[in-house]
Amino acid sequence: MYLLITLLTNEEENGTAYIKTPWDVANLHLMTDCLLETVNQEMGYEAYLADIEYNIKNFEDRGIKLQFSGYQATLITFAKLFVDLMLLHR
Image (cartoon, rainbow, N blue to C red):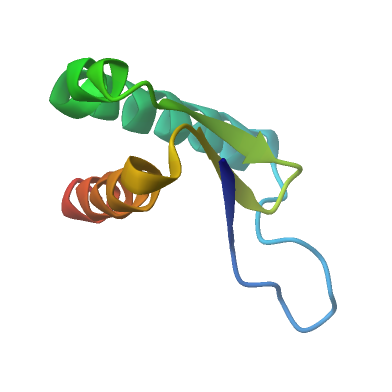
């Protein structure tokens, strides 16, 4: 089973993306790297035991994309824990 969650930033009134400058893009890359490292440290071994794969990627210039794959019985629970951990470390 696959699960895809896309978290987008707010857009301005003129329709341009919130992430506009190279500085914003660099911060987005840094944030996704830090989130992935945090999840690896907190839940990586448990995910490995449950045969769950996960990844965080930048989604164009608008936000991040969370990708999960694994068995249906554990995937939704893991995704919820993943998002909860992200919100805890924001």
